[in-house]
Image 1 (cartoon, helix red, strand yellow):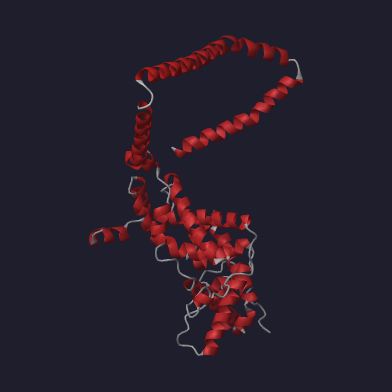
Image 2 (image 1 turned 90 degrees about the horizontal axis):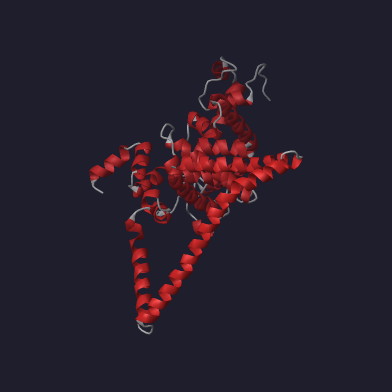
Length: 199
Length: 185
């Protein structure tokens, strides 16, 4: 791919990329995967609470999306359509498997020294500060995992997928006011559960 | 313990912390700026929001080759499924197998025997086609009369209505299948 083509890919809208994929340039789907992989994986990880399953499910969601592309309605945003499919897939996954409320971030011996989910980059902190941050990261992950599914999903869409309130309203097919209200309630519950960290 | 006589409720605090308007209480922002207790509650909510955003940026990354893997295992698109390029190799393999099979048989079995086998196969296939055709012709001839007779015998009984009702789920299912087939086009 030439520099020019790369630039064009960067400025191409999602909907234009979808149109090109549907017109026979199937490998262009990689552009969409590249754009959304991190946010989608982050969202799925918080929804299902298990890193390995989240990786598989993220892959499965992209494959589902590819298969469903001919049914995509370009009147809607691709991102909201993608996250709607992702939300349904995550809920199906949770129904298939018993919800895991505890395992969020099991210490991984191979990940020693690597910043992991819920932990913060702490290069300038003393060991005590680092430990406190790691513990806080775990507390946050645990608090999210303990939320009711609807609240967890909204928190994941807002903070981990980075969607705006309007996009979440489209994904969940809810009025904007309801989305905000439920999100604020979810965050109030989180704050209550993290009272120990805040004090 | 807050001594504020009109404290912000948790939802209002969260709305302020996330920079949204508080429709239920238009003076919420001013109140939080003046009231130490409510201001502190908003500050705590902002800290939790900040932690959530930081936690999002710290989720373990995907493998480097994730995109390539998705592209490698993706199913064929509709256009690809009908493309000769995709099926060329299996078709060539099939043709090669057919030719080699014919070649293997052609050696030990002579032309006369092969012709005999072909005639035998054609005769049995012809018999199958003729029987199927006769069955369809008979069905066409007797079908309407049989259905009418069945209908006449069932009409005065409740069994007839029950049979009609039993057809409803089949009709609904048929409609669903047709709608799905049309929407996939």
